[in-house]
Image (cartoon, rainbow, N blue to C red; front, side):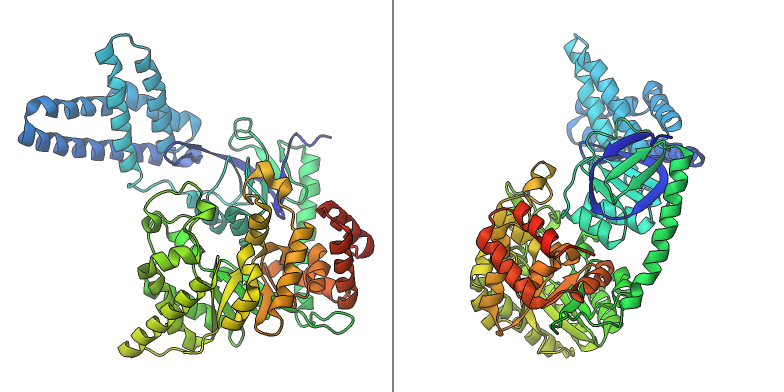
Length: 578
């Protein structure tokens, strides 16, 4: 018995999946190779032929306008374009690729064009070689038409597929996850990338760091994605498939038992109560938050509404209805909405209007929202209007100094005055808070606490900026160390400086891992926010811990250790997971 072809990666979103592979490949210009089911081939070919007719009509209109304005000589360029577009060699080769390779029309056009361009490049006669430029122009026209005619969407992917790709954007992962694909296997990626966060939120098994596998795996191969061990097994023996099927059934049974702890308090054995809240990206997760016993929503990442709609921007009514729904569903529990944290690798091009050389250190988070207050006001107006429907709190990301807080507060006052003039109802006492995810914010956390109602430590970015490690770069993934003594010292410092001045929680991915729970309690954190499904395990861990012993253990670690390896080893020795 063998496991077939085995590929090792890293676990970032736990789970198991059995299905058939769908290999997505990307070319310059965001062109994806998307598998097409055999029964849909004729429809895809027809879509290609409609795009040719549409493009030909557009070229004809352009040719006529050019001839009218500057004469027939230049208009002849577009006549040449039309000849290429309707050339039988070109058309027949695209159709062959769609039919034989079972791929979408965009990919077939791109690959056919690339092959013909190579042939043009080898021609010695210059004026014939330059026809390659005409071919590139025609391909661009045709691609625009294709992407506007019943565009072959990722969301059409069948549900039993394990998607294998070099990378996926958060919006692509969102469309695939909502479609219900069985799992995702990526050549690159990190444990705290936003694509990973989407996969966890939608409970889609995800393995990253598999290397160059997309060229070695075909579409439709039977595969197993073991996102507990970071394995992608292709063409496994039937006995292996059956073993994993039984494991899937066992996991389903255990999942149904996890909600049994819903009513139990998250209280340590020395009577320290820890608040457990949920991080969510999508409204669909509210049900999970309630089922697993979340005391509220500690973090709603509102930028995923932008990522989902990109390149469009959501309007005020769309924001309002979403916030209203969340508040009503969770009432009387509080919902903390983080204002959109666009920027970095979550760029909304309509907002930034240009790329940045170093986006993680550029115009992102509160910096971006204050610089484009016209867009930010839309979200703030919707938030305040929704505030009468439940317990809302508003939190701003990427705060680096006090001036950003003051500008944010002034903008909130201005928005409330505007709503008051328009006769809208709202709660003028909505709590305002900020994320602690930049070292400078951690260092002035005492000042921030006296100015705001609450603070929340975002460990994902705090680790990234403190250790200077790109959290989505797999080449330095080993340096992203949540238990680095510098991080533990920073957490302890923040809790001491904040004291009783404001509510303090921790909402980064560290909160979801029960192995690290003793360190967080030892640092003085008394409120944790995590993915809904992590709440039962973290609660169970808390109920077996002594908070005073956790504090003493952390203090000893910070005093005696200088590496995360030492911290992890000591934690396994003195407070092992049961």
